[in-house]
Image (tube, rainbow, N blue to C red; front, top):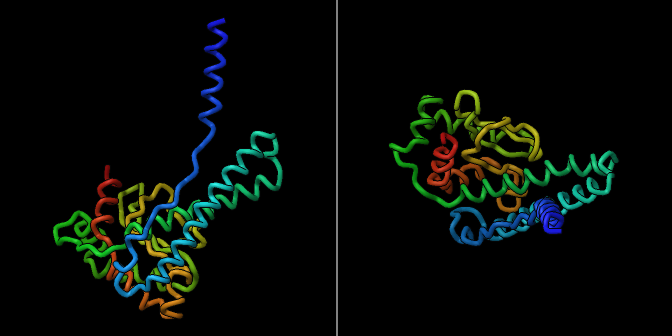
Length: 216
């Protein structure tokens, strides 16, 4: 009898391990009033958009789990939701990277990041020109400064539609949102001005921390 209850307990614990807790939206209220040149109302709208990606990611995961457990994982609905997950999940995560690397802080001249930039691009200005030019490309998307997983090289990459264009295994250091919702209500079509404001408000301390984590 004791062995039977042990087996039941094991099955119960195993089933419980399949129940995942919801992702929680981070609170970025501390950015309000602290991003010079970026309207607070624009930020608040952007936060709500991000919260939508968190909610949709949770809902999709629950629906996919339910379809899988009911044996409906070979249906068009399952396939469609599975494809949507990449869009919603990456939309959630990229916004967190973006908001986390906002909030002005200096990048010391002897920082590991600056040394890495100079090593791979020759100078900070060369790297910045490449990053800005990537952000100025026609289309909607993101710019991500990655550490590539093969050589540890710094690469500025264009990401389209949240889930297209990522460097597999790459470690994001700096993320800039260039979807129109990130700037158009304040800057209209002047994306260049928005990118300038973004650079004036980069949290270089956070970017350096990401580099340290990527190296480890």
